[in-house]
Length: 177
Ligand SMILES: O=P(O)(O)OC[C@H]1O[C@H](OP(=O)(O)OP(=O)(O)O)[C@H](O)[C@@H]1O
Ligand SMILES: Nc1ncnc2[nH]cnc12
Image (cartoon, rainbow, N blue to C red; front, side):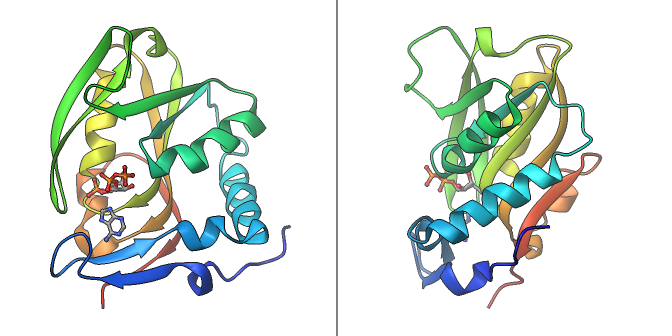
């Protein structure tokens, strides 16, 4: 078992960013402390033990930071779920609503392999809209979404309801101000 690290102590809380009324949970504080970052990846890896995972999908941009080292540790391919206009190859697209806006996610068609088990990874899960849209990119083309992993969960924004039916795991939860 890894030594516990108090992640809350390094996550900065920024009121009214990027819009009035939003309390922003800033993971850059985790990245500034190697022990904290390593602890996150250790814990995420632990959560993947005894699960059948063929690939990791990481969500742009902050999700990439955690998804990439996790995929490398597990020895599985990493698919990048990117915002519109960023992928050079042929891509599937899906639009969705955010806590503070609207967006479109895309994935290269070649990274969606029918019949494979994909685990989706992000830094933070709020409404669950991003992950739900990302999941549909895979499921609509024959891949299985086996669950979602996040560093931070905001359950008061009801992601559990949006992602109902899937395993959802986070390292720590915040319940609003
Ligand atoms: O559960 P949801 O309500 O969908 O919100 C969570 C998403 O919002 C944030 O990304 P953001 O779109 O701010 O992009 P960034 O990672 O590029 O900063 C966060 O990194 C998640 O991807
Ligand atoms: N409150 C929040 N803090 C950081 N990232 C977010 N993504 C969506 N909501 C967020």
